[in-house]
Image (tube, rainbow, N blue to C red; front, side, top):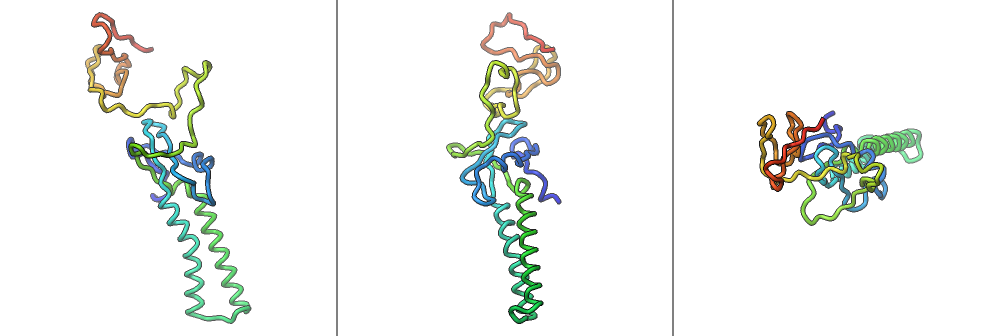
Length: 192
């Protein structure tokens, strides 16, 4: 089912698993409270988590069994307290609970993402741990910075390949970008 695929980042189209975010975010029932955000683990963009689709399907999980029971009662009325009445109520409760349980399990896949707008205030329940000397060299996906669109495209001095402005090293030969502020005589260092 394509609608139950995990949400994708609108910037880089990578899959973003929201299971852990949904687990740790403050909730009222099954709905996350307030504006909740996440940082894309691939491109580093700040994203807003939207719950509209999950909320609508949650309402359907409750109201669809209710509508089915009411229409079956109208189509074939039964006396209150009869065996048929009890069977219908039991079916209604079982279908409703099954729908709610399935909905609750699939909520992280029903959430959608959009880019965070300027000035929008959201909470990021999954924030990276503060840097310490032991992990200062380690870079998690959550520590990536958003793409800097203002930096111009540059050409690698080693292999002549053109690179996007947000790349600090050549994608082809891994030669570090020579900063424009450095002296012209400084050679680019190759990472091995």
